[in-house]
Image (cartoon, rainbow, N blue to C red; front, side, top):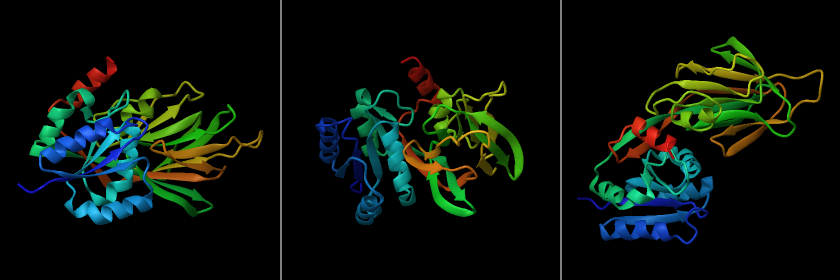
Amino acid sequence: MDKKHFIIVTNRVKDPDFSITDQIVSYLEKAGCSCSVHAGELSAGQWEEILGQEAAETDGILVLGGDGTLLRTARDTVDSRIPVLGINLGTLGYLAEVEQSNLKPALQRLVQGAYHVERRMMLSGQVLREGQILEDTCALNDITITRNGRLQMLYFLIYVNGRLLKEYHADGIILATPTGSTGYNMSAGGPIVEPGAEMILLTPICAHTLQTRSVILRPEDEILVRIRERMDRADQPMEVCFDGSRNLALLPGDEVRITRSQKSISIIKLEETSFLDVLRRKMSE
């Protein structure tokens, strides 16, 4: 059996003394595997250096933290196509596969190769200002547009495949993948979707209308969100956010174009429990 190698990424806030990280490293090394450990939020340059040296020999990236840590790592390493395994050190993690209480059996299955890999769709988001692209990135969970400052409603025009769907007056709008359906989308009253499905969820945040339902769109649809200018009052500061961590300020007239990304994330699945089993357990916590 070939020697396995794993990259370990640890959230220092969730494991400040590296006690859990050290347990994992010790177990994997005793099982004949090799590891490299990295802590904190790694920059694009740091990831480029790490993957340039280790990607060819790496069997998986183990992420210790919560869903936020896993989302950042998945997005930053997506081009490597190395599968990612989340080890939950947070409170409520839907993406993290492994809980601390089940750590050793999970590592045993990992070393034995007793797992399968799920592909998860991502979203591609472009921010345009006067026809120029300011940002072009991807998101595994969601792309959100929210206010930033005063408590005033926002005005959006939503187009799908070039045709006007609706003008929303709301506190914001969420475009989510099935993986992201249990994140901000769920908190805003959107539907929960099996993460292996392929669709795009559009959910308004506190819409100022009786028509507040989410809209389910095909994965091949193109969604354009245009920020409306208000002539009767000062414009409300707002921003677009990719997976809760990458933010960009928006101005009236700006557009955010959302499509299915050509990239996808590989998630390591160790357990045979279904998404519904996980959902039932999480909702009872």
